[in-house]
Length: 259
Image (cartoon, rainbow, N blue to C red; front, side):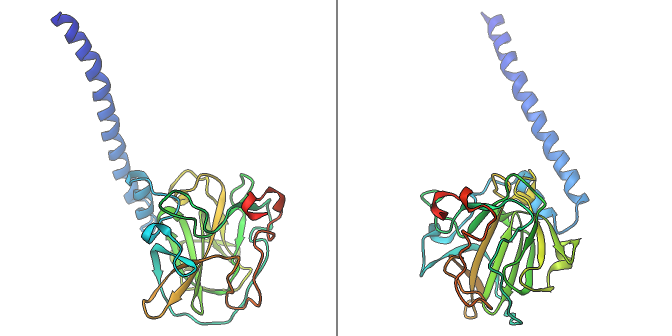
């Protein structure tokens, strides 16, 4: 009997030891890899490799509607930039097949709702992405569940575009520190699409697409934390609301909420 128990114990112990060895090896490789990356990329990669998986988007108070919008965790500080106004109501990625895969306010779970519009790219990545609003780039880099993101601000509004593959301006791929502080015009290509890179740039993305979000800023709180529906927003330079559900190359592929 003791011999049988010894054999069974050995069978159980070996997989546990192998599993522990794999975990130690993984952590060691991560610890060796992260210092070799650019400083701006290290937090995002470390979070992606070692962190706890995050929901697609995260909100204060469960992402419930607050005064027509939603208060987002991790909102970026109000820069206060006010400059020339320009606006584009059109396909943000005209070089590919695009369609709406999710809309503002849709419950993702019982605890939070979607804070913007998701634009699918028909399984493609690397499509040039145009900004719909002119302004100052106040942030670019790893941004939690949004992945690789860029934020542009003007006259009390911020536009967030995320799940990027690369940052780009004037036809050149840039590092985040090179694009932050730049002033762009509506229609300028500021990044390339991603969402399926299978690394930290995806954030909590489940496939190739970009996330488009609009936030309003408060001088009192020095934050731009209230996400509002892009379909109802009036950005600087925007004379009337834009039907973003039709501003894609193939609206027939839109989810039912966007038809």
